[in-house]
Amino acid sequence: MNFNGVKTTAVVGAGNIGHGIALTLGLAGYQVRLNSTNDTSLQKGMDFVKADLDRLVGLDMTKPDFAQAALANISTTTSLEGASRD
Image (cartoon, rainbow, N blue to C red; front, side, top):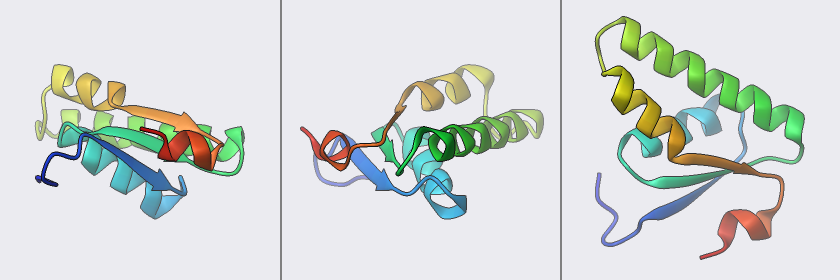
C-alpha cells in the first residue's frame, strides 16, 4: 500500500469495519488515528485489533514483533480535530 507520501491516516469509527481498516493500515506501516465518539467504543475497537493480531500470529501469518509494531502504529482519540491534525 502506498499513498504517495502519506504517513498518518485517520479512521472514523472503531466498529467492525473501522477497526479492520485501522489494523490493515497499521500493518502497512502507517500511523493511524482511530476515532470514535467515546472511550468505550475505542477500547472495544482496540480489543478487536489486538485479538485479530493475536489470531494472525497464531496462524503464522505475521511475526509477533511485526504485530507489536502494527499495534504501536495505532492511537485513539474521541476528537475529530485530534484525528485530523498533522
